Image (spheres, rainbow, N blue to C red):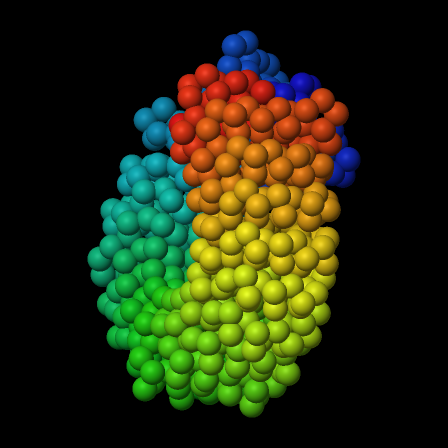
Length: 584
């Protein structure tokens, strides 16, 4: 099978061979490894090309050939291929294919109920052993929910259902409830990013979930639950779910009253992960679950604009009682200098297992920000992710936290974006020797050309860096030339973002020559850099050079907004035929 046509492949999984040993197109291989069950073994590839694809009868015969094995059918994000598959399914089902189907993933095919759901419903009705169903990112709408509900009544073994981004509304939930209530083995349910609104809709969902007592993960984010909906859900979640481990209610308009309604749910001893991002909960809402959630390992209450009067006691109690907390996200709450000091003192006072701390966009300033990092150094030396962007740290703040950063030997991801850091701050950061770093975000800092030289010194120690974001860092030709040698040594680099600088044609040439030697490189953003025709063509020549280790591996190149002519844009697109090139 030609790897160039990997975007048209369908994967049919059965057992026998390890999935990672099968020679597939790059994208499908990645999909199979990441999305399919670990016990899935053998792969049959079915091609459906735009010009002369397999006939439906050919595909149906291939599907039916595996009726003796437990099988998994994946057609994710290939609308044209799905159209061919849809016509083949009825024949395959009649030959017994559905009888052994255990895993069905049709996410992102943008199919419409009038011509696709009948085939899917027919397949589900004849798949009694199906345990995984993913129809996310398809416009099911309310009519589709009715078809799906009727089919799900014949799938009692379902343990995983993903219907996120399927345009479900209140009527759709009412239609779906009947089928969902039959899934007594359900462990994971996602209905995120729909339009489920109204008290009646949430009451229907709560009633449907009463029989799903084994539910472990529930994702409802980006639905307008509000306080009344939260009350309806709380009644069933509290009384029925003793195994619930992960709950995502981000962006659900809960407010303080909604959080208060969920207090008993949050006290479940099984609850390990809780996401309440962007719910206008304020500090009063946060205090509603003080004394609960003692088993949490993951807590996200970002973008809630917590009021300091209630935030101070809540944070102290939270860190004291959540002794297994590994991930804490407080970003976007604007806790300011006072909140930063409270956080620093709380981290210092209580033993914690924190591995990831996100406190960006809090305006903590140059006093509190270093205090937080110093507390992490003293009490959480194994921290791996630290996001402290948009906190007005400045050069002085970087100087104050230099010693503490140097002691974080396992720090893999560091975000210092939008912190008013200049060349002086970069000089201190360069001394930190962050050898474990794989991701560094310094965007929207006035690093300049002198700072770029210091950054080169830091990168010389960070040989494992994979993601580097230098967007809008006031880099010019001199900075690009100074940075290039260090970039050439970053053999693990996968994504480089340099947009909104002024490196010019020569600077782009220096950068291009350096990253051409990075074998793992997948994405480069050089937009808004005054490259013009000469820079565009020079970059194309370097990245497409014969014998380049990454030829064919680069997936995305953005050279838009560079004052280049149509001919230059056309030539760079031609020079990189396997890469998505953004021009204009």
